[in-house]
Image (cartoon, rainbow, N blue to C red; front, side, top):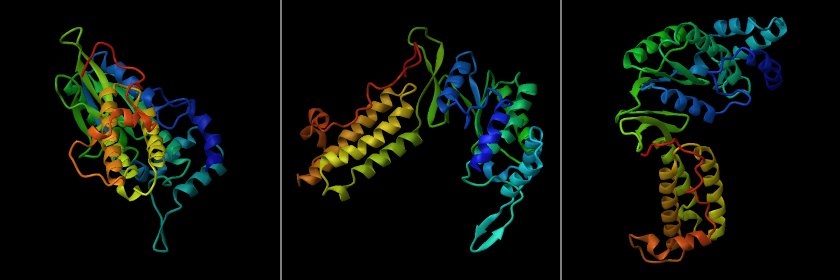
Length: 320
């Protein structure tokens, strides 16, 4: 499958449009987020936050292979792809053939999904650009519009296009959101995107992004796991080494944005967890303010990776 992907990817990469960012060479999630920020700051105050229901498991095989056949004439390659698509699911020793979906977890599935969803990109470029701007990361996408009415029309048009691929919008996870003046904002690629009023020009709003609630809960869970009391027999240096690996990876992704306050919150949480762990390890009596005994200087002496001060850049003239 990887060999087939290496052959097919350059062929279809020539056709894929700039609105697509997921699983493509020299394209990233941060570029997708920057595209959202740029368009929102041009005046888009509403967004269609869309979720495709079971995209990888629902793509129609005939529609997908029809898109592949537009650029690939080798019948052996087409037959190989069809065999992979129809390989079926093994459950309790019984193989069930499938009429839709791509091989789950395979190296070629993201490419096949991009090929299928290129239909959405192309149709939107031809007939939907007057409604708003599409930004897609594989099967996750948002459409930024200037009015709520445009966002509602965009939802109907997207549903019609996806139906030709055997796909449908998730009714509970697809919503129209406002970005400014205290409205909801939306979560995309781990970030929460929201317009914030400028401190320099009152009444003007600029899009900012910071780690979403789900991302914050995930990193807190990993910190709790790394400082769990079952590791009390290990030295603090071992605990800190494991903790630093978690913090570096999470911070490297979320440092692109307006994450300063969220980084400070995580730093405080790490300090609290380490203070609790050290108290348990040394048999100290319980008290509420764990960090009074174990100060920031103590934390710094342990060599704990600090997130604060590592945010790469922020939107100008706007404060949360």
